[in-house]
Length: 158
Image (cartoon, rainbow, N blue to C red; front, side, top):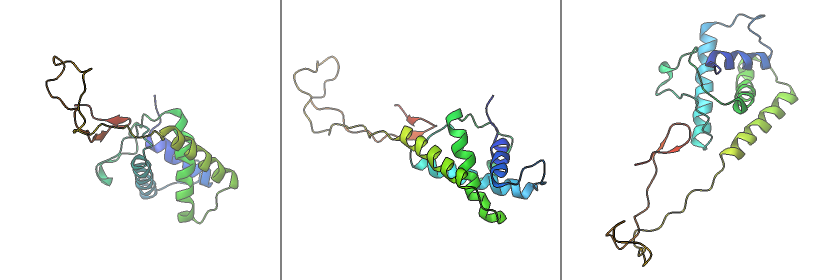
């Protein structure tokens, strides 16, 4: 069983010092935090950090009790970075340890996601004598493919 979006948001509020068992968070505050978390993870997704987080098509499609399916290695990065984003709105300052933890966890995710792009042959490159005609009767290499990024991990295969 994975974390729900509500659990991640409540953990971020705990990092800020607004734990749910002490302070009653209103539904509006939870929705605001959910939108911030969705936008933060959409930004991460655009940077190549794909962690299987279900990004909504629009802000109204996201639910607090939705399962996230994120790996355990990403929980600390999400919680601590969300806490950094939420704290100024509530007039709170986060501890230096939380800032350090947020930076280190984010950099670990970014390092794991850093992969060089795949080199592709131009479509004008001759296939050469090693290519057999029963594989392809085209004398040139297939052209570059622009992968459509889908899901959490990579290109859509044709």
